[in-house]
Image (cartoon, rainbow, N blue to C red; front, side):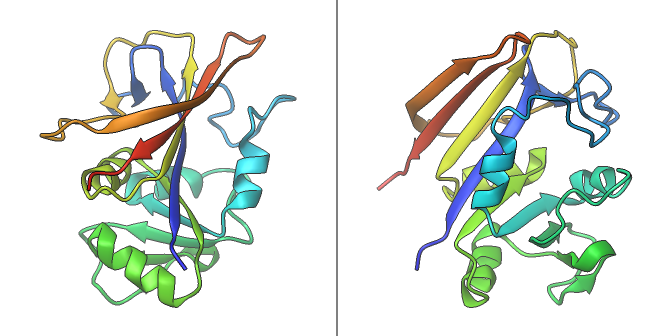
Length: 182
């Protein structure tokens, strides 16, 4: 069975996922508490069985009042880990593997839908042509500089638009399918 890899992320209108120091103070709900509107996240989260996060995203999530990924298999990627799993908070495992190797390992464990999160991790999975869908919610704020969602890839990555929704809050969410290279 093939694994589907999806991204569900928010950016500032100027394309940043965090400030240069990793701070998300510009992002409503960045403290792990959602308001009345979840922007489709609960349905998305219910559809996944595994999360693959970068170390910085994991560190941020571990500061929330409650572990936000309860009930999901969580893999944290960092070059400071080894290829053997390191046990982390709430049953998460830390690994230092290339994206293709991570997916091979997850396929053996029966994973079917993986949520890929964290700037560098998303960029590595995109570069490896492993992301199938990407949902980006643009927040109506310009932060001027920060950590970009996308990095130079050396090639075009073509997308097919699936949907766009504007919310009363001013958030605009677009969903795309990645058109995989042959």
